[in-house]
Length: 328
Ligand code: ADP
Image 1 (cartoon, rainbow, N blue to C red):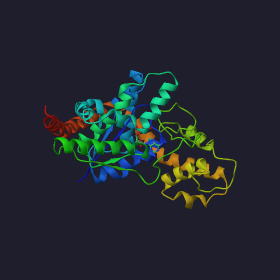
Image 2: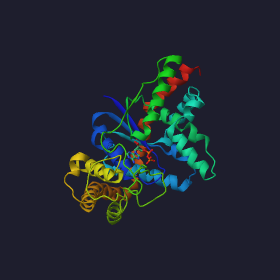
Image 3: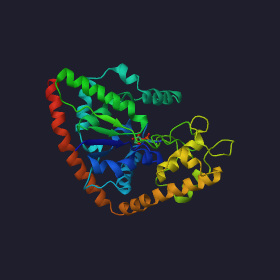
Image 4: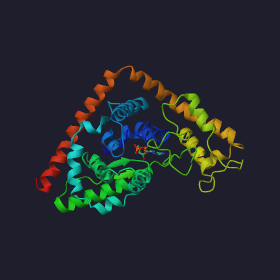
C-alpha cells in the first residue's frame, strides 16, 4: 500500500481553495487508497510574523476541520507537526544536504520575501529554509506520494532532489516521493482578484471563502465575485479569468467540466447562484460536524495524541537511519 503525506499550514482560516484543492481529495480518495498521514504543519506557520495565541487557535481549528471534513482516524493518521520532533531532527540533516542557492530560487520564497521586504519587515531565516523542513516532513515518513495544489509542486521537486542527493552520497535512506496535483481545482483563485490564488495566508478579503463562513456570507462573496464587462458565459481562463474561476469552482463541486457547464448559462447571475448553491451544499455538512467536534474537545485531543504517537513510530526508524548514514 503506498504511503501518502500531506499537510496544511495554520496561517489563517481554511479556505475553499484548501478544501477543493487538497482536503477533499484527502478525504474522498487518499485515506481509502493508501496509508495516509495528514499533518497540521504548525512549525511552518512561524516563518512569517505570527501571534502565538492565534497560531495555537488556528492549529487546533485546522485539525478539527480536517476531521469535520471526513478524515477518519481509523483509516489515516491526523497529527500536529510540532508534536513529533523527528521533523526538526531530520530538517537539520537536510540543511546539510541543500545549498542556499537552491533555496533562494524557490518561487514562494521569492514572492513571500519580496512581500515582507516591501512592507519593511524582516525576512525570517526559517522562510528561506522552509522547503527543507517540508522535505523532512515528507521524507521522515518514506512517503511515496504527496498530494498538493500546484503552488507546492516546486517544493516537492526539491524534496525529490534532496532525497536523491542524500541517497547517492550517504547510501539509500529515503524513498523518493512524487507530487500528485488534482486535475480539477488545482488552483482556486480569489473571487475579487482572479489572477491571484485564494490563499488563507492572505489578508482577509471578500474574495476569499472560508470553510467556516456563515452561509449568507458565502453566498454574498460568490454573488459579488469579479467577472468582466461581457455577459455571455464562456470558459476562457486567459481572457475571462473571473468567469473561468467560477466555472472551475462549480465543476469541482458538481463533478462536471468547466467548458461543458458554461453552455448551460446565459448570464453571470445564474452561474453565481448555482455556484453558491453548490459550494454551500458541500460546506454545510463540514460546518455542522465542526460544531459537533468543538463540543467534544476530549475527542480531538485523543485523536491528535494517538496520531502523534503513530507518526513518531513511523518516522523514528527513518530519521535514526539518516543520522547513522550521515556519520553521527
Ligand atoms: P495556503 O496557501 O492557503 O496557506 P497551505 O500552504 O497550507 O495553503 O496548503 C494546504 C494545501 O492546500 C496545499 O496542498 C495547497 O496546494 C492547497 N491549496 C492552497 N490554496 C489553494 C488554492 N487556492 N487552490 C487549490 N489548492 C490550494
